[in-house]
Image (cartoon, rainbow, N blue to C red; front, side):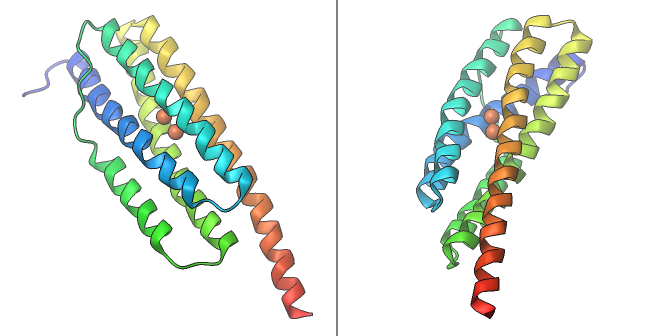
Length: 169
Ligand SMILES: [Fe+2]
Ligand SMILES: [Fe+2]
């Protein structure tokens, strides 16, 4: 299909993001299961609940343009999730494994943040206020999730530093 208008491009990107979020609903429980730190596990389970909502919100965005929700394979997210699974499969000390998981999860969040940012700009230009509102809500949650992960990684880093300092004495 030849894309000839911003409306059509918006719809194509929407299908992509929809598939990305749906994949995350499946991937996040595995990330949660793999996490050792209680705090990290909770962060993943909480974000899973938010992600289910992101899927629903995108369905509402489809409604604003009178389209049925449809997914188009998002290869970018597929790749990021695959990398995350490789991280899970690696043999690493608990704290380092958690830091690896956070690294993978933050790549995902940044990918989403960029996707939602673009979509929101498109919606603004198209004058679709309802879509702007819905996309902004999710964007806020992705940014908060990213910040939370940074915080958890900071405390894990401090712990591993303390551990290696202890090992040296
Ligand atoms: Fe999301
Ligand atoms: Fe997310």
